Structure formats: C-alpha cells, structure tokens
Amino acid sequence: MNGTAVLHSIIDGVLTGSVYALMATGLTLIFGVMNIINVAQGIFVILGAYLSYALSVHLGIDLFVGLAITIPTLFVVGIVVERVFLSRIKGPERVVMSILVTYAISLVIEGVLNMVFSVNYVELHAWYVNRSVRVFGIYLPYIYLLGFAMAIVLLGALYFMLYRTRFGTSVRASLADQTSAALVGINVKRVSTICFGLGVAVTAAGGMIYGATNAFNASSSYDLISRLLVIIVLGGMGSIGGALIAGIMMITIEDLVAVVWGPVWSNLAFFLILVVVLSIRPQGLFGKPSVRVA
Amino acid sequence: MLRARNVWWILALIVLGLFPLIETNPTWTTIGVFALIFMACATSWNMFSGYSGYINLGSAVSYGVGAYTMALLADHLHVPGNGDLFWLIPVGGVAAMIVAVPVGLVALRVRRHTFVVITIAIFFVFQLSAINFSFTGGTSGLQLPLIPWLETNYNKPFYYSALAITVFAALLSAAVRRSRFGLQLLAIRDDEDRAAGLGVKVFAVKLTGFTMSAFVVGMGGALYAVFLGQIYPQFVFDPIFDISIALMSILGGLGTLTGPLLGALVLESMQQYLTIRFSNGSLYLIIFGALFLVIILFMPQGVVVALSDLRSRRAARRVEGARVVMGKAS
Image 1: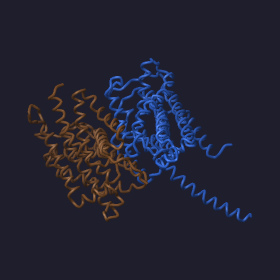
Image 2: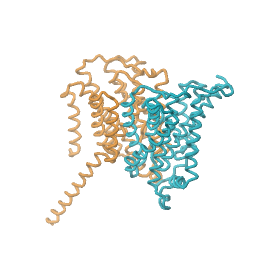
Image 3: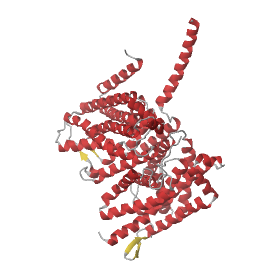
Image 4: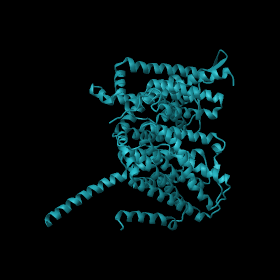
C-alpha cells in the first residue's frame, strides 16, 4: 500500500461514486415526492444496461448515443409502472405496500431478462471502455471519466429542472408537503407520475456505465439495490443533496477499504458505516428528524 | 369445554399429523416439510411484524444464523449423522435470538419506513459475511453429517419436527396476542407516539418482540440445514426468503393467527410444486412475481380478513334475526 494507490482509489471512488449518486438521486426523489420506496430501482439499472447491450451488439449503436433511446424508454417504463401499479396503492401502509409491489415487479423483470438474455454474465464494449489516460502517474480509465462527466451533466440538468423551472417548483412543493401543494393548485398526481418516470429514467444512464465497468446479469440487481438503499438512507430519505454526498462518500470509502484492507472487507464496510451512522443520527446525514404524522 | 373454533384447530392438527402416514411418496412429504417450516417461520414473523407493523424484510438473517449454527456445531461437536442432530435445532433458535439483539438495537432506532430499508441492508451484511469469511466455508458452503436413513422413512422425523415447531410457533403467537405484551405491540402498530404517551416502553417492547420472533425462524433454519444436508450462503441468506415470509403473512392476513399459517401452507406448497413442475427458474420468478402483484393489489388485507369480514356480516344478519324472534316472545 502506498500514497499513490490511496490517491488512485479516492479518485476512482469519486468518479464511480458520482454514477451511484445519480441513480440514488432518482430513488430518493421518488421517495420524497411519492412516499414510495422503489425496490425495483436495481433491476431498472440492469434493464438499462441490457438495453444498451442490445443496441450496441445488434445495431452497433454507440453506448452514449444509445442513451438517447434508452433514457426515454425507461422514462416510459417508469410512467407505465406508476400508472398501472403504484397509483393503486392507498391507505396507511402505503410505504410498505410500495416496497412489496416494486419487489414483485422486479422479480417479474428479472425473470424476463433471464429468459431473454440468459443468466450468463455480459459486459458492454466500446473502443473507450478498456483505454485509460495517464494523469500525474495515475491511470484513469476513459469510461470512468466519461461516466463522471455524464453524471455531472445529468445531475446538472436535474438541478436546473428542480430549481429553475415551474415544474421544479411544483416538485419541491410536493417534496415538502403534499397536502399543501395540492391546496395551492399543484396537480400532485401528475407531478408524482413524472417524478417516477424521471427517477427511473436516470437508471438508463447509470446502468450503461455500470454495464461498461462490471460484468453483469439480472441478479446483479440485488447488489445494486442494496447499495442504493444504503446510500439514500444514509443521506436522509428524500434528501437529494444527501443522496449525492452519501453516494460519492460511500463508494470512495468502499474503494479505500478495498485498497487498505482488501476487497473482502469493502462490501462489509459499506454496510457497517450505515449501522454506525444510524446509531448516531437515525434520520441519516441530511434527513429531517422523523416527526409525528397523524 | 370444546369451542367450535378449537375443534377446527384440533382437526387441522390431526390432518397434518396423519399426512405423512397416508401419503408416503417422498416428493409430497418433502413439500410438506418445506410448507411446515415456512408456516412456523411466517407465524413467528407475524408475531412481531404483523402485530407491531414493523415489517422486517431481513428475517433470513435469523434463518441463516440458525442454519449456520447447526452446521458449525454439528461439525465442531462431531455429532454423528443420526437423530442426535435434532437436539441442536433449539440451539440454532437461541443463536438467532442472540444475533437479533444487536440487530434490533440498530434497526429499531428508526421508524417503520427506514426500518424496512435497514433490515434489508443488515440482511446483506450477513449474506456478504457468510460469503466472505472462511469459517462459513465461503460460497461453497458447509456440509452436514449424512443421515443414513432409508428413503421411504427419511422425511418423517423432519416432518414431525417441523410440525412440532409450527405448533409451538402458533401457541406462542396466540399467547402473545392475548397477553399484555401483545396489546402493547398492537398499540405500537396503531399509534406509536400515543402508546409511548400512555406508558408503553416502546423500545423495550419492540426489541423483545423482535428477539422473540427470531427464535422460531432460527429453528426453522436449523431444521432446513439438517434436512438438506448442505447449506450455501445464497440459499439460507436468501432475499426471496425475506420477501416470501412477508408475502405469506400478507396473503393470509397481517396480524391474524390463522393468516400466516394458511398463507404459508398455500404459497410454499405452490412454490415447491412450481419449482418441480417448471425446472425453468425464470418462468417460476415471473409466475411468482405476477401472483404476488395480484394478491397485493387486489387483496391488500389478506384472505383471512376478507373471509372474516364476510362471516361477521353474516353473523350480524343472524343477530338481527334473533332480535326479531326475541321481540315476538316478549
């Protein structure tokens, strides 16, 4: 172990962490606006990765160009799932029910993906996937840099939408208080549907980077969703800034632990941090303390 | 005095008790063993999650700890491959309870929504640990002593042990339901802040319930380990187990006594049957997921509650009728 290795793992962590932050932002946005914990986020990421895979293998479309097709596709998938299943869940046990429904959806998608693509691991290929650039003696893979740039652009677009548009104002109002938002004339139902679509759409981009940096099959979704859930709980459920910071922080720490103590411990460290943080701050780093909801 | 309801319970017990004597085909008795293990686990899960409303999606932690305790103890104590193994089953349950205490201390600090997510996260800590540590045998798992029983009678001891555990779970769950402690759990489900205001020691009650419910699930895991003779981290720490247990209770009726028993009996038998019928795991996933969706969206309160609604409406009509008769007599 030496200084360069540590620095390298920190840079890697920040670069890949930004992609996780993007996927987690979608998840926390859905929870904040709709009170739905979308356990299917993991399989949506894999679905996005498989779509990019199909486009690049069968039609020879570049991974990043393909996003122009996969992001809208997943946006539509999200809207359909919300309209057909999630909008039906009502009542006091809504959050718990939403977990079960999205879990069931993810099982069905997993089964379909297994049938269509088989359970063999695949990886996304493009000319830039296995090349890297040398900066100050550190080799940085192109795909990490491109993924980072893409995450920044998409997060920037999301930020712009949330804070600079009229629709974004409606979303933030719904995040703060659904009833009041409805009272001032915001169509909360429409905002919810679009938010779910957006929250799912970002997984197309995340999935493409994930597929280019990891070999995956449909059951990789379990690993993904457990990480994403930890990230949003740690950042504070419903806090977009929290998801961003927690995403980058967690992946960086994981990479560091892998370099310092070995990869066996990195997964464990990931979850242990959650346990430690929650013992001190049950509401997560940036969450509001739980208040009584009558 | 025998009440009508008790007669049904006794009848059900007789039917379950006679099943392996009448049906000797190992395929069916194997399904019976699995169904009973899940009936016990779902009942026990419901005793905490159903009563308190804290949905635990990490119950496979208890299951896996029970299974690994069984496998490790059998190895270290050099227990021979015979009936002696069964005495270790309660030890697996106790180990699951011991593990549940620190897990509960962390997970129960937060309110319901986050609790669900944290139980999932803690579940993955255990699954990854079982894969990563060397004493658990890593991905190749652990082997249990082989039991040299004849195939025709092999399933019987397992079946009756599972039945005993199920009866124990049902009695415990009924006892809790009628006790002061059970009322406190129900009060937490209805309104935790108000319960605390009325003097319920909320955290202690939740932790006790959480720990108690781990016992039977741990025993189920231990029995499963002996039954299969080999355990792998991805089969005893299985995310499908977490969700199946919850689904069984919800299908039957969350917080009821009969609900989880019926839900587990129907779903696990069907699951085992589908696995045999369609060796294709993917098709099975699709059917299971689709069924799951239908149940949750159309019967969110469960079958038992839907049925008892129907019965109480009929009973209400009978009372109406009786009043009319009494009115005439007076």
